[in-house]
Length: 228
Image (cartoon, rainbow, N blue to C red; front, side, top):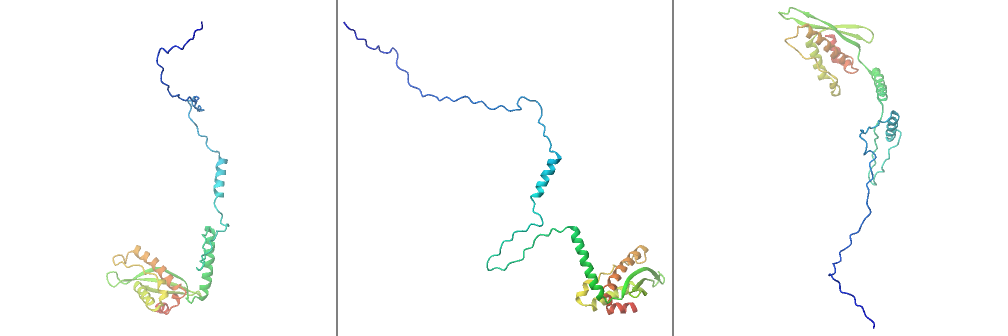
């Protein structure tokens, strides 16, 4: 007689299914090369040769003066303007050019100068009269002509004022800026030696600027002033 076995019923209820959590391989961070050292980090300075090399490379990046500057063509229908390049002349070249230009200016103007004076000085002054009365100061004006003759003219300060006025009234307008200003007056210090010495120097500079000028020095007002 055969027997049939049947599966036995489970003794406990079945548990619910849970989602599976993925697993990843463990990651290990790289270790720092200096994590186990207690020393300070020292920055090694660059050598002199490295500095020279870097400086040379820096200068090579700048364009030289000989390189041509690209010029953008002008638009159609508009007149082209000249392109001005920045000048890179050295101080020596500028100075030599200035001296050369001044030589040309002097050579051109000395030949056309009609002034008769070659050198002008005011070597001194003297007091005329009594200080308590009608005393005044005269200045010795020494003018050396082109032929070597020295002319001495004693002039008061008021005479210099008269010459200044005559020049401003008789000269052409373009020559008026060439007339310098006279030194100022001082009623309280007009007899002090320090004031007179300073005025003598200023009058010498003023008279030299007038008489040595190629056009002003040849004017009629100057000749009349010297003959008075």
